[in-house]
Length: 363
Ligand code: MRU
Image (cartoon, rainbow, N blue to C red; front, top):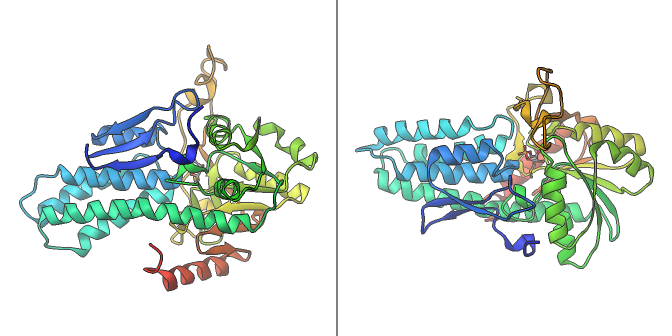
């Protein structure tokens, strides 16, 4: 077992080697392997193959990735630099479609270039470096703040059910849905965490379980189809999940299977919380059905975790990576600026007003 997960860096910029440093999440929990990536193709692949995954971590990786691309741009003037930068940005943006943090971070990087029109390439590269570092550093306080708000909703000894991995591995530190658990541990609180295995890529069984056990948390892995029984047994006081994109009306896209958990929670009268940095809220999307849902390769379902192919050759496979939880199933959306409650159209707007008010004061 690794050192406490909180001491490991999930995603970072290695300035010495000019490389993106990540834990290879496809090797967990068996092997803790740190990758040092310098080539754009390798960074694109790392995001596509889920070596780095989870909405905030993808955003940070892309910001660092596009900074590294900018370093390599040979351009005599601003316009030539911007044209090449734009291409590099679009390339990384094509790696995955659903998590808005990817586009949010890349847009933020592009804004640095646009706001400094006419500046020489060397200066732009230096500014892009600082922005990538800022995006990474901000993720730490954002997740800590989500954790603090989340902690106000639970008490020592509670059973918490989570789906997929929205923990430290999915962010720079603490995670979103697992941040209350990590912060609770720091304060001497103990929770009983149930991690859905999360078919087909097992982010719950492999990653959340690894993360929780390594942090010394009482952790039980359940198959996705066991959540109902565990709730019926009254072992779950609250559900905490992450998300990849929240629409303006509060509908939230997260790992496939999340909406089923929300439906079960409603049936059993258990609060269901979505943990979302404001960078995951996309006000340009009105409702969940407008969110693009990634579909992935059939082999992830039929072969990936089996010694030999499990489903018959030629069978059709539907493999969406995410689903949308309707806002009426969500008890609260926990952001770094507070907890939004229904009706979400209003409460999310208030969260952004608060963000505007505080912007600049929390860095
Ligand atoms: O396909 P993944 O593993 O990137 O999916 C991740 C999730 O669905 C997470 O719950 C989400 O990105 C939030 S991470 C804080």
